[in-house]
Image (cartoon, rainbow, N blue to C red; front, side, top):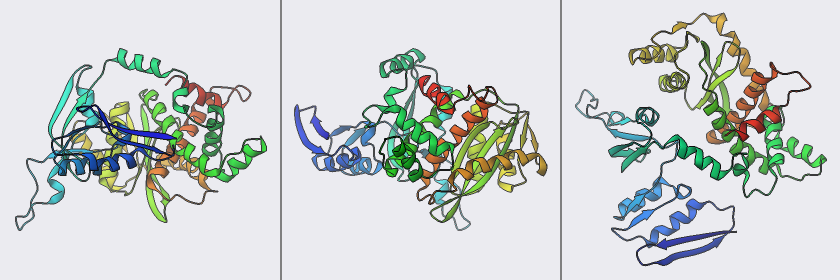
Length: 379
């Protein structure tokens, strides 16, 4: 059961009280509370109730809002030098410039705040005033201690135990099994779990272990291999960009709707910011990759990197694609780009843990499950 409350700080009264099933999303309640807003009100919302559509409705009603931003939200500023067509009309796509929030966070020091006075958030270009704040390391450490250091905070409130959830997600990501296959394997061991529940676990914890692994996987690599492969989502081809080092260990992945210059540019820039410049970058002769590399070099990246486009040298990553794609041989196909990305992130992370640790330990000592436990324990 979930109890939803809306409290008015000024009058000290509850404006709305509601009891609903625990599976309901908080965003639904946030939309229902819009009727209680008056012009000039200030609405303070937790991240669980975040919705750009709701914030836009508040703005239209003359109310103000304070909210954190989700990681996948894009922030724009107006372009001072927009592009024009020959007839003098402005190109709409050049009216705004995307801000690189990750770059801003790297520039500011702990304890400092960076203000974006005239920001525009999301596709709706919602007018806002943004603040980026970098907290001290000790504060982050104390928060982690408050939440618990063993990874149990990620499983708080779950019906099933942590071990069951991890094993189910691990089986699906590690082997070529369907959700129903994993459900039947657990049932043989006396645990009854619906395949849909396992699917939700994979979507949530696949993305979680990827984010934890990415934070810890920051060591510099001298030689990179970069390429893209095809993944079918709802009957249409989508493109999975992957990068590995010379030993075959995964550096990063990114699923994109299109295979164009923007997708290649974003992925290559993210790589060089996270790992630094490699000695050699090996790709194929795709025009988007060549154009992106030259553009990034003009911006000051990849200055000492040798760009190699010899075909047979990229066979390493071409062969590595199959280890990820064959995991979904028994699946019914993906229906959603977001869920596809989360599933692939989990699969790629488990496969990476296997590749990195398997070569260092004996068969009798190695366990992917133990490696996953250690990854969560140190988060």
